[in-house]
Image (cartoon, rainbow, N blue to C red; front, side):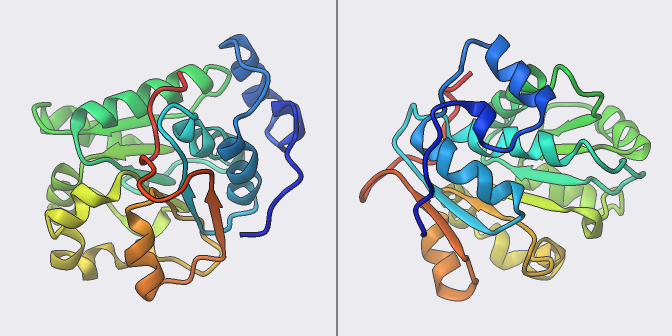
Length: 224
């Protein structure tokens, strides 16, 4: 990946003032290396694989630019504008907390699709339209199969901590269902380091943000 000139402040990354204010209010002024490298690429809607050590704020590296991009446009019924797939409901809930914290200056609709929660409540949110859909694959594909979710409107797909997804064979079993997530070449897809192998095998990824060597951790939850 082409190295960027790293900025010393979040205000220099191209994020909106609403997002920058929320980040500063949370106590952060200086981005980590993964954030400084990844955020500009996501804002430009480039595909990216993000690799960095645990504790470097990888979740924020995709949450912050997503919030900025979501400031234009509106949600439509059953057509989420963004989709973040997480392997467990605990990780999905933690990403939702990041959106709530950094999106406090936004009026965005968010849905969390995880097991152990009523289908009816989740369907009601989808029917109203959501800007941010955070889901575990099983629950998301279940509702997709029932016709409650349309993936054609997803502008920013994120596959986080991809090794558990691949391990379950979910993508292979539902490749045709998930094909809309591929989108046009300009649509960003933010992966963990585990996704790099599958992406490099068959998908064009023009940008790669790499802050660590072999064995780096996946997109992290700890910058919150």
